[in-house]
Length: 91
Image 1 (cartoon, one colour):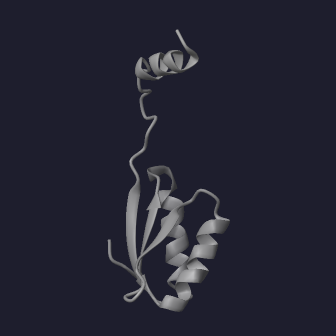
Image 2 (spheres, rainbow, N blue to C red):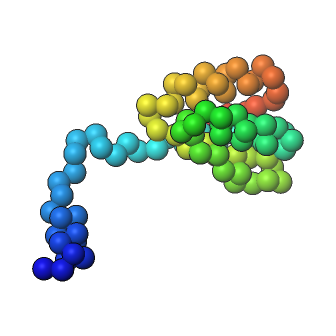
């Protein structure tokens, strides 16, 4: 058996571990356009907290994707940011 055939055999015969994959949680936000860069920098500083995507730059709508384990910390961060600049949670 070739090395590639061996890898395919191992991968195809793996059984998923319980709770191995966490479905992502999604938060939609509307905010001032100039604050998106600030939020992106903060999210980047919290390594692995969330992934930020700008869905609609004209309406300043961004999406945050995070794991269920990080949701509590992300909500705490967003609650604090609401005191600094306008931030509307859409979902």
